[in-house]
Every structure is written in structure tokens, then in C-alpha cells.
Length: 180
Image (cartoon, rainbow, N blue to C red; front, side):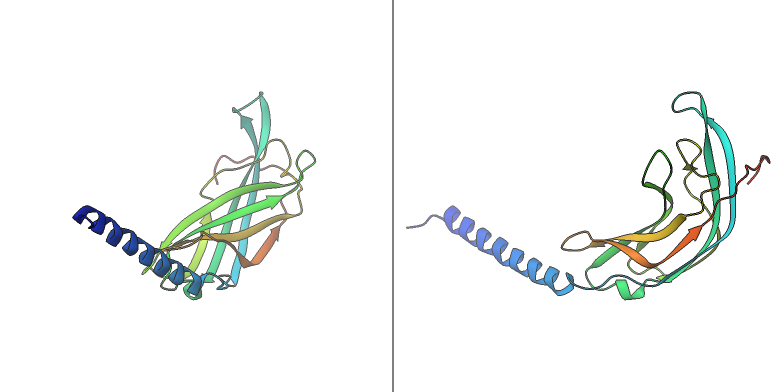
């Protein structure tokens, strides 16, 4: 005859199996959903400085400043399986020394229940836009992209790029003023 502990163990194992099957069923209902939405990015100001780089050899590096407008409606992304979104604006560009450079300029976390409409005006970069050299000056193809990670209640953590990019040309000369 089975003891109380072996019956409790069987009941616990069965309960875990049922919960795992239910969790998988919940995940599969939203696993193949398209989570891309249109994004409108507009850059109103670009400034470039040549500053001392204290992280390596005593060379000067490019430091870019971008003021941008960002609008998107994220409501179609949210469903019962989305806990939060981690949004980030990144810049991609090529230089002579690197075929692909990617820099995160700004980020934001949008929780379920918060406003899902982004309508940001005159936002400045949250993080420094450094290049390891002089690759920003006169670079005509710096592409800004808004992407996001969907943090689900159950399932995988998808990385989604917004449907909308913007290419920004950087100036050919450095700014000499002290402020931004």
C-alpha cells in the first residue's frame, strides 16, 4: 500500500504536469502573433563634437548629439500575455574601421496598464553617442531604429523591430560651443 508521502508526491507531480501543459497552451496562443507596429521617427537637430576619449589611448573621438521626435501606438502589441515592453532607439552605421556599429541612444519601459501611445517631442539622447574614432563626421547613413523586447507572462522573449526607420546625415564640421 502507498504511504501518505508517496500519494502526496504523485499528486504534486501530476499538478505540475497539468500546470506545465496549461502554461504551454497559453504560450502557444500568442507565440505567432505579429508584434510589429508603425513607428514615426523625426530628427530635429544633429550636433557633432570632437572630444577627448579617456577610455583608451589619448586620442579624440566623435561625440554625437541627437534631438528627435518619436511617435507610435503600441496598443496592438499588448495582449493578455504581455507583461511589459522594453523600448530602445538605436543607431546603426558603418565606418572604415568597423562594418557595423550599433549604439543605443534612448530606452523606456512601458508596463501593462500604462499609456501605450508614444508621442515624444524634442527628446535628447539618454546615452552618449560615442564613436571610437572619427566615424561620425560626414557620415551620411546613420540609421535610427526603434526596437523592443516583449516581456511575456509565459513563453519566449521576442525582439521586434518597429516598422519605420530614419537615416540621418551627420555634419561635416564639428560644433565648438560648450552647450547642447
